[in-house]
Structure formats: C-alpha cells, structure tokens
Amino acid sequence: MLDIKFIRENPELVRERLALRGGEYDIQKILELDAACRASETELQKLNAERNALSKKIGALRAKGELTAEYEARVKSFSARITELETESARLDGERRAALLATPNLPHPLCPPGANASANPVIRTHAVRPTYSFKPLDHVTLCEKLGLIDFERAAKVAGSGFACFTNAGARLERALINFLLDLQTRERGYREISPPFIIRRDCMVGTGQLPKFEEDMYGIDEGAAFLAPTAEVPVTNLYRDELMPASALPIKLVAYSPCFRREAGSTGRDTRGIQRLHQFDKVELVKICTPETSEAEHELLTADAEEPLSRLGLHFRTIELCTGDLGFSAQKTFDIELWSPGRETWLEVSSSSNFGDYQARRMNLRFKGDDGKNRFCHTLNASGTALPRLFIALIETFQQADGTVLLPEVLAPYMGGVERLLLC
Image 1 (cartoon, rainbow, N blue to C red):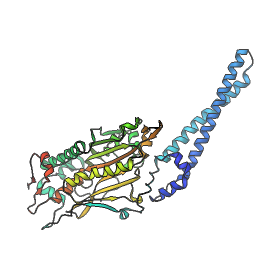
Image 2 (cartoon, rainbow, N blue to C red; image 1 turned 30 degrees about the horizontal axis):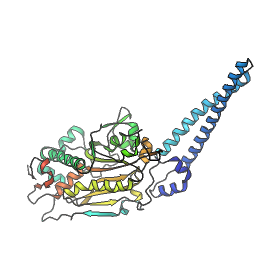
Image 3 (cartoon, helix red, strand yellow; image 1 turned 60 degrees about the horizontal axis):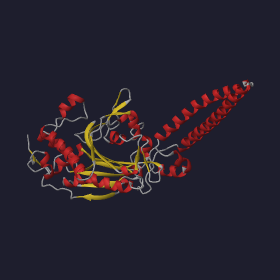
Image 4 (cartoon, rainbow, N blue to C red; image 1 turned 90 degrees about the vertical axis):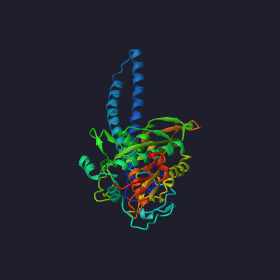
C-alpha cells in the first residue's frame, strides 16, 4: 500500500510513476477522500476536547452547588455530533483504505520504461541453447512415453488443469523439491519454513493478492480464507503486525508449498500439459530487510533463484520487467525464463521482486532503526522455483535420441542413483 503522506506531498510524481504502468488510477479521488477524512477527524478531536473541558467544568460547578443545565445541554449536543463524526470518519477511512488497496505500487525509478513484455531487456543468459541430431519432443509426448504423468486420471479426479505425477515422474518432482530446498538452506543461508496452506483473508490482503486478484484464488468459508496461491503469502505474513530490531534483519526464508490458482481468464492459454495448472508445486524464497539494503538483497535473491538452474545445466535467461509489465505489488522485478526445446519457447520459472515497503504497510510489518524510530521493512520474494516448468525444461533439454532422458548428476542423490528415465 502506498504511503498516503507521500501521495499527499507528491501527487504529480505519483501520477507520473503510475502512468508508466499503463491504465488509469484516480489519485484525485484518494486525495479528496484523504482531505475529507482528515477534516472529519480534526473536527472530532476538537469536539472531544471541548466536551471533556465542559465535563470538567460541570463537575466543578456541581461541587459548588451551582446550576449546570446550560452546560449539560451543550455536552449532549456535542455527543450527538461526535457520534455522527465517528461514523463518518470510519466510513471515510474505509473508503480511503479501499482506494489505496486498489492502487498498485510505484515502479522503481530505475525500472526500464515500456508498455508491455516486448520492452523487457535481457540482463544475462546462462549456458548454450541445446541442439539435437533429432527433432526434440515436447514434454507431453515425453511424459506419455516415459509414464511420468497421468493426465486422464488426474482429470477424472479433479477435472481439467490438474496433473498426476506417477512412478519416476513423481520421484523426479520430489527430488527437485528436495534439491531446491537443500541448496538454499545448506549453501545460501535460508531458514526452511513449512507453512499452513490455508490462509486468512487479511493475510491475502497483506501481500497484495486481495482485493484485486480474488477471482484467481480458491476461497473457502465464504471468502474468509483461501488456499495458498504461493508460499510467499503465508511466509511473509508470519511477521505481520510485528516490530523487530534492526539487528534481526535481513530475514531469509525458504518454503515449499502446493499452489492453488483458478487461472481465471486463461482459457485456451498454455493448457496442454503442465505449463499452466490449477495446482502445482513451488519452492519460494522470501526476504525481509531494511530499506537501505533492499536493492542489494534483490540482486542476491535473483542470483539465489538462478543458482539451481545453473547446477542443473539448463539454458536460461534473466530479464528485467519494464514498467508496463510489472506485477501489481512490485516496484522492480527480474524474471528468469527457461528454454523449452520441445516447444521452442521461453518458460517463466521465477519472478524475483522487490516490493519496497508496499506489502509491509499492508501488513504493519516494521523494525526499530538505530535512531529509535519505527520504520516499515522492505519485503522481497522469488520463486525458487516453480516446479512444473522446471520439470518441462529438464526433461525436454536432456532427452536422448532413443527417447530416454538423461538426468543431471546433481539429482543422483535424490533419485536413488537413477541416472536415466526409461521408456515404459
């Protein structure tokens, strides 16, 4: 959530930065609601002060045995107006907060300008794009030949948009999760979390999934709670409403979770195979730090998300999102994309985002600075990584002419020594 004081003092700058995102955002409405809310609160404070002063005067007069009817009538009239103002102030404050919650984060000043994904610059590329002496198969065909995923039975159980990993496919999925968690905890300094997968509504608001993206979420209990769309939500919200010492930062957390998304409006997009699912596995990296260190922590976070892909020997690239392609809550984002030989396209496998204090304001997540002042933390997260697309890129990249898949050596300890996925 944006700082209302910053909007109040820099309305044109806020308009300019939001305009770079595209779309229309009514900053004037926020300013008008803010002015009305502050005026109502000021009058309320004034009347409360006057009522308190009169009440003391009435007490003093009564002690002297003097008449107080005139003053009591004034107190009564104040009370009626105070009740009205309390109701009005609560309404205006709610409308102001709703307007702020519907307003996205400001793009970072160094975020490259652009209208859409075509303007995203490539920052770096890793490894050489693989070549083959045969036409590489896509992951759906490979999964059928190798017996890795049963799409028909998954649809029988849950409907379209779900997958059932089987045999070596299920083992490979589990191996990848453990490999990702072990790398980040043993070598990159992250603390592992196993969070709840059912999340309260206010926590979904805290990280920015609500109210804007509610139609994409799986709600339960009439919208009071939701299935986790990503581990970012429960892990970041572990620290909501807390005031931490600066010495406790940065906090580095990693978590596995299944993710549940309706993918509303995605009909017809990447629906073949496991590229886009309603339920999928993901390992998530979360950081909480001070404003002074967040940009450096963001670079390190992105490197942490890239590292397992490098060790798996996969061809990937890292791009920076332009202002028009940023996610709602992010101020700066790097996307990591894996090459899919079977489809000859790039697959986004991770988004590494710096949210500044946008999420922290929504969650009331603060730290006490060395100067004794309470300040909002900065929050960051990156997919470390999304498993279905990693699975796709891996089996497509390392497929052999005989239809088998040769596994990277780093996975051998997690696959019980299995080095190759064989035909059924």
